[in-house]
Amino acid sequence: MGLARLALAVLAVGAVVTLLVIGGRALLDLSDAPPPDREPAAAPASGTATGPAATAQVPTVRIECVAETCPLVTVRVPGGDVLQHREMSRGEEVRYFEPELDVVLSDAGTVRVTENGTARAQGKAGARESFTVRAG
Image (cartoon, rainbow, N blue to C red; front, side, top):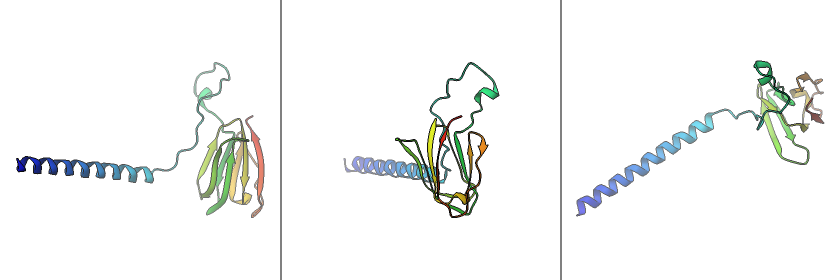
C-alpha cells in the first residue's frame, strides 16, 4: 500500500512541475512579444465596396517616435478611455481608428504625427502640444 501512495505522490509532483514549466515558458514568450497596435473593433459601414481599397483603412491618428526616447504621449477618447499614457522609444509607432481623439505630447519635437493620412507639422523641441483629431 505504501508503494502505491509513493507512486501517486511522485506522479502528482511531476504533473505540477510540468504545468509550472509550461506556464513559465508561456509567460516568457508573451513578455518578449511586441505590443499590438490598437485595431478597430469593427470596420465602419461606409458602403459596399470590395477589394484591397475597401479593406485599407487610414488611422485617425498615427504617432511615431523619432527620438531616442519620446516623453509622455497621451491619447484618449474625449470623455472616455485613455488609450495610451506612456513614453515611447525610437521607431515605435501607434495607430488609433476611433472617430475622435484627444492627443497630448510632452515634447512635440520628438514624434511624427499623421492625422487621417496627412502629416501634421512637426512641433518644436521641448514644447508641449495638445490637440483633438476627428476622423475625416
